[in-house]
Image 1: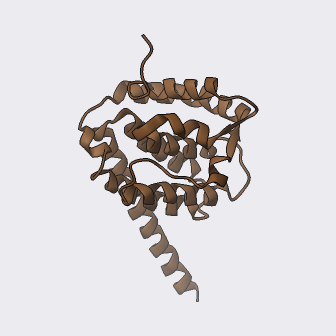
Image 2 (image 1 turned 60 degrees about the vertical axis):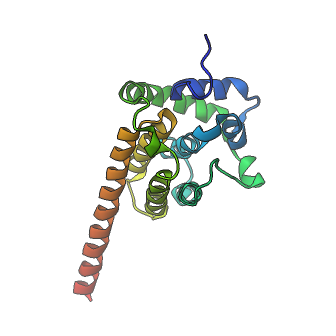
Image 3 (image 1 turned 135 degrees about the vertical axis):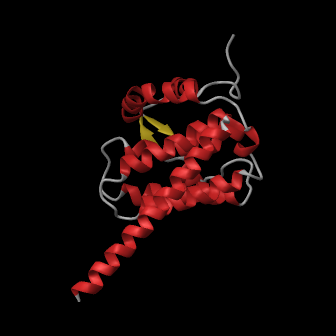
Length: 201
């Protein structure tokens, strides 16, 4: 029996999204429309993709802004993600998406074994706002020109995404803790860098 969108696992949703779209480009809007309350998690998953594939320099800034946009919508209590028409019509090349899906499926399968619906209230409003705030923090960090951090932020976004899609409050709390740890680390490194510059001059 085929699972509904609310029961499907993350890899099932990815496979369905690939099979249901036409053409050489997959649009964000085509992913989001049928997903209902799980669309926030799936959008975070889509925004994690460029961190794992060859993309132009500076794309982290663009993805960071989009992550901030998603986080703000969760922070302000929106039930479903909103994207302007221009962004809904933006997409990812099908070939890039297929390579990403093939590469990331083993990780997602492992996360699916770890994740299951539990403490679901943490993945919904009003507690949803905590995830929104921490996604804003993550988006700001992703947008900064910090070398060699794309995979770190990509993995963090993956954990956020799968926890939200699978409605797993425990894994979501791990994502919260990782976000806070990364933010503290970046603040400490920034402070150390400023101290070093002051000593030089």
